[in-house]
Amino acid sequence: MNKRSGYSPEVRERAVRLVLTSEQDHPSRWAAIQSVAAKIGCTPETLRSWLNKMEVDSGSKPGVTSDAAAKLKELERENRELKRANEILRKAAAFFAQAELGRKPK
Image (cartoon, rainbow, N blue to C red; front, side):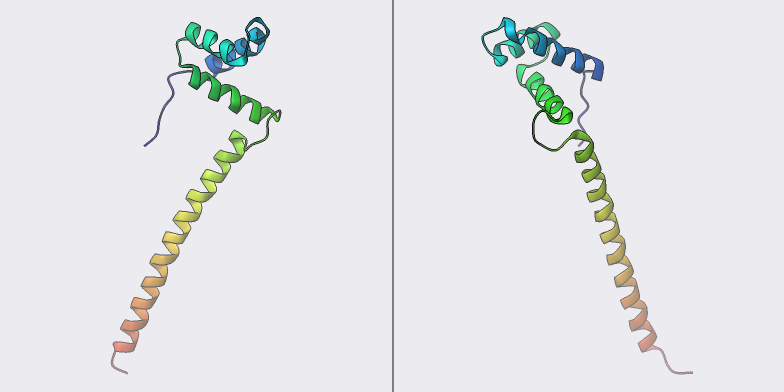
């Protein structure tokens, strides 16, 4: 099941920028996240995940970037399809080999 976010990339970027710029005005990062989340109408946990993803994508935090994760997901999907196709071909070859053995010689 695919989930579609109700927030545009521009809103996400702006919210992350707001957290980063207003972080020094709050006692903690979480307080800044809660403040900005209330202003834009999302949950603090959603905003925290956007912030973490942005930090990983920019390289300031270790982890798998969004581009690498998307590429890996695509390769895994392609691998599943190829395995399925190979299984079908293997079964078809076995079926035709068995049918060939069952024929009467000419």
